[in-house]
Amino acid sequence: MSGLTTYTLLGLGVLGGPLSLPWGLYVLLCQRTPEKPCLNDVTEVGTWRQTLVVVATFLVVLTLLPVWDELGEELGIGLVTAF
Image 1 (spheres, rainbow, N blue to C red):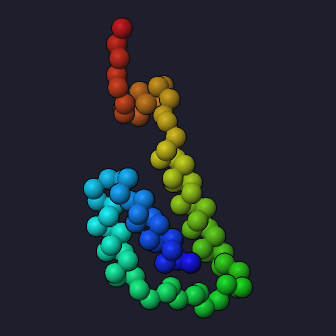
Image 2 (cartoon, rainbow, N blue to C red):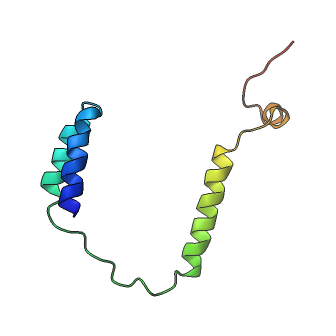
């Protein structure tokens, strides 16, 4: 099934950009062995990993949120417009 999917996506790569076909051929040639399954999918994730995910998610959201004008002026970042 994965071979059929790979060849179908390579065929559709003709419609894409010029880099999709060489990249697809590289993946097809270098990834001949199937993926190894995880050793243990049943055990719960530890608390330190959960904490790490929460902190990372908070940093991502904090990075992607826009800064309002007053806070930007107070921090000295952003565009300064004087009318």
